[in-house]
Length: 89
Image (cartoon, rainbow, N blue to C red):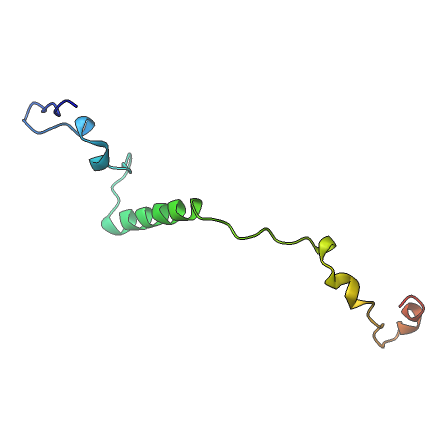
């Protein structure tokens, strides 16, 4: 590996820095304060930690749920039109 080439003032240039010391986020426009930058970094860290996580088991379909068959039919509720639904229940 070659040594970082110094800039005209003697300091190494940011482009020649090792990858671990390069910034991951660069502000292109505006002047965010420390709180705004902290919120941005917190959001990026949360998104990165969520992206690599394992997901739980997929939800079961209601069609494959056997409890649905065991429930049976519900008796019609009493009310003004209960007689209409009494034959179908």
